[in-house]
Length: 134
Image (cartoon, rainbow, N blue to C red; front, side):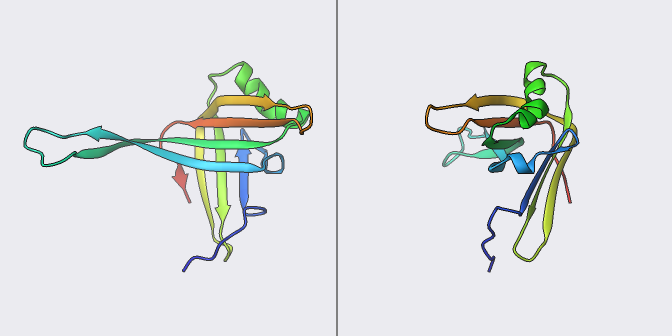
């Protein structure tokens, strides 16, 4: 049976060679699989096959000028593919690393503020192709 693992100290994120883990309070890896409808007139129910996954890394944290200097320019001038790495370590210190070499770019960048809260940021890294998983 798997042991639950707290996220703090067990997730590491790097974008374009810069470790940004210390600026993140959220780091989610997502592989969304679209379904291709293959139902035909002889089918007895809906049929489908999985398409290619669409990979993203959703990030967020408390904003400051340092994280803005890393991610902000990528949103202002999009189109350059960078390297993204996210690693997860379980309770027994086994680490699984997902790497996209020169296949990551900012797909969404936002800075949020409220009068009574801290200024925060969120970003989505759009990832091309399958990762190298090690």
